[in-house]
Every structure is written in structure tokens, then in C-alpha cells.
Length: 245
Image (cartoon, rainbow, N blue to C red; front, side):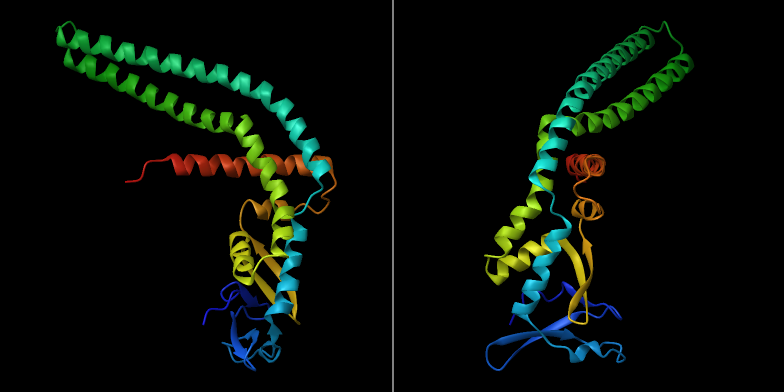
């Protein structure tokens, strides 16, 4: 039999996983495995319905008001458009440099093939041009990450990440237990339990960033967090776009 929250919950005292069993024919209870034989938390049995109510509280650490999210969105949209245009110009400049470097390498090769350049001269100049091209490509890749961070699609993704926990909580309270577990596993690495209460929560990114903001009504704090979330998104795009071997 599968238990929805098994693998997600740990005992706060010694880090043992909570296991579960079905008792009295229908009630599911979770409890510490007491794997180190020195924890009295294993005596505390928690019903699945009780844990569901406790776990519903994890969303509160991630919820911001719609108003503050919209304010940050509009501010970053205005700021981002200026940066986007500026970075776009730089990107064009880098592409032009790459085109010129390619032309120089082709001309260099023509000179070598026509025997107007000695092999040693050709090889030295070719190496210099290739190294310069590698440097430009590296700078261009970094720039593309910055461009993505300021484009409209990324702004929308960041906004949705801020809005999502509120939607998730609303759905969580109505979902079946299997769907509730699926939501929590997408959100958390794990949660620890002590004295029948949640003692600590380990969020996955980018939700971990959102959870760190204590004053979720402070515009500057939320705006700063917005940039961190954007960086996480930009990095994930770069990683996912890399070819697999």
C-alpha cells in the first residue's frame, strides 16, 4: 500500500524518516521510525488528515498579496524594457564582431592557400583570431542570459511564480490526498516534525527564495527577490538549452 506523504516527512530530533501504516481498518497514521533507537517522537502517531491540515500551512511562507506582486511586475516591466533595448544593441555588436572575425579567418586561410603567408605566421594569427572568437562567444552567451532576464516572457514567468503559491493552497485544500502529495513534492525537499507540529521546511528553488522574505508587504524586499527568481529562471534556461552528449 502506498502512503501519500511517505518520503517527505522527517523527525526533527534525529532526522529519521516518518513511516506510515493503516490501523483500525481505515485510519492512516504517520510516526517516526526511531531508526537510531533514542527518539521518543516515535510514540506520537499523526493521522493523515491531521498532517494535511498542518502541511497546508507551508504555503503561507510563500504567499504575497496580489497588489504587491503587480506593483513589482509593473516596475520591473518598465525597467526591463530599457535594459532589454540596451542589451539588444550590445548583442548586435557582438554578432557583428563574430562576423568580422569569421571574415578575417577566411581571408587568412585564403592567404595561406595562395602561399602569400608562411605556415608559422598563418598558425599564429589563426590561433589569435580563434581565441578572440571564443572570448566573444562566451561574452555573448552571458549576455543572452541577461537579455532573457529582461524579456517579457521571463517577467511573466516570474510573476506567475509569485502568484502560484496562493493558487496552489486554494487547490490543495480541495484536492484528493494523492494530488496534495504531488503538489507538496513539487514544492518541498522535506519537512520536519516535532511535537506533532512542523518544525522546519526545506523548499525547492525558486520557492526557497520566496520563503526567505520576512516582510512580504515590503516593496523593496519583494523587488529584490524578483531579481533572484529571474536569475534562477535564466540559469535553468541556459542549462536546459545545452546539448546532451
